[in-house]
Length: 247
Image 1: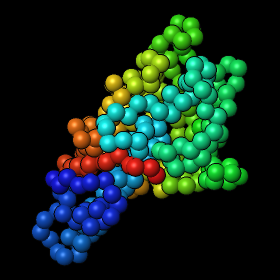
Image 2 (image 1 turned 180 degrees about the horizontal axis):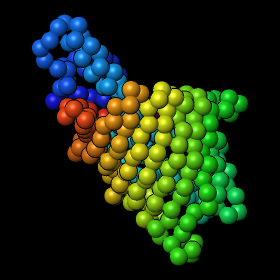
Image 3 (image 1 turned 90 degrees about the vertical axis):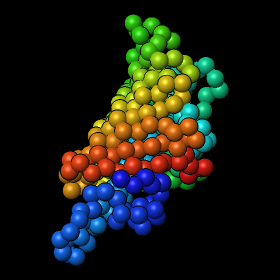
C-alpha cells in the first residue's frame, strides 16, 4: 500500500507502484495490471475531489481540517435572514459563479454560471423548504434536501441529490447524505459527518468498469484528508487530499 497526495499528476506517475498491480505473469499481463491500477487511481481521485466540492465542505479555504457545511449553511442563512443575505458570488468549491434566490416557504435555488457576468449557465442546485424539528422554525436539527446538476466547468456532468442535516445554526455540526453520478459513468453514495467543523466520510463508489470500492475519509492534524479506498480484490489505495487555495 502506498500513500500518495491527491493530485492528478502524482496519480499518473505513481499508480504503477500501488498495491493491486499483481505479480509475475507476462509483461503484457503486468502492463494491463498497471493500466488498470492507473485508471482506478485517476477515477478515485476524481470522485473524491467531486464529493467534497459538490457537498460544499469549503476545503478550499484553509489548511485547517475545519470545513463546515458551507453550501447548506449558505442556503439556511438565506432562508433564516439572520445575516447579510448573499444573493450572488462565486462558489469556490466548484469554481462557478452563482445567484441565489429563495421563496416564501424557504425553498430556493442556486443558479450556477461559468462567467462573472452570469450569462453562461453551468447548472443549478435546487432545495426544498427546510424541515425544522417538530415543524418549528429555528428548531434544530433541520433537514435541507437538494437536487443538483452541473452542466459545465470542472464538474460538468455531475448530478444527484444531497440531504443535509444541520444540528445547529453554526453549520459546523451535522451530516450530509450525498448520491451522485458523473458524466464518465461513475457514481457514489456518500455519508459525511461534520463535528465541530471537521468532516469525515464513508462512501461507496462505483467506477466506470462497474468496479465498486469503499472509501473512508478522515482528517489529518495538518489539514489533509486521508482517503482510503478498499477494492473487492483486497487491494487498497491511500490518498492524502490537501485543501485547495482557491480553485
